[in-house]
Image 1 (cartoon, helix red, strand yellow):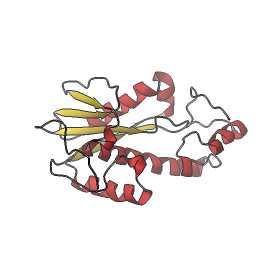
Image 2 (tube, helix red, strand yellow):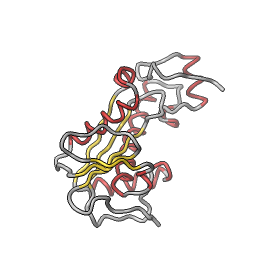
Image 3 (cartoon, helix red, strand yellow):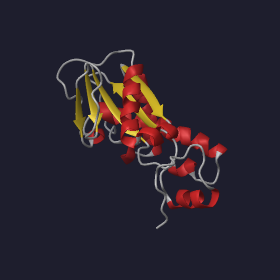
Image 4 (spheres, helix red, strand yellow):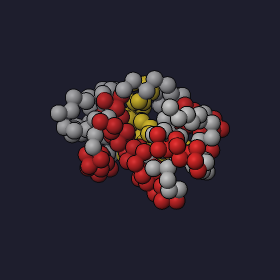
Length: 195
């Protein structure tokens, strides 16, 4: 059963923010912003990394159906190389908030670093995706969106195993980079080591 909290701020619309793909060698970093109803609850909703693919897809459907509003945004590998992964992750979160039709009154951000969004206060929560429903919901939307993106990319760039590793630095992926070289989706500033 989930022990996550429904909200942080006692009043107003609150958007949970999270990203996926920060530690990858290839592909974009993807962020989601989710505003859930205050009475939203699901017994299995938690950090997306702790869920099975089937659970994530079911929760993705429910979050999209019941959320007051949600948005997903991405920052590509070239931009990540240009500004660094931390700034790119926060940029993706800002872009997701930009796309919300409902303006939140508070942002609940997974992690410990964030650049203030104009005129909306925020709170950073370390491991927030295992503490608050809205952040967990954002983590599910970001991860499922990004995983599907990398599965499609794997068809254009076979051999790197993106359909399984989503661009993360698995041994297969690192070996493929050494053998086949980098694609246009790889982050050129990320170090690749075989250990």
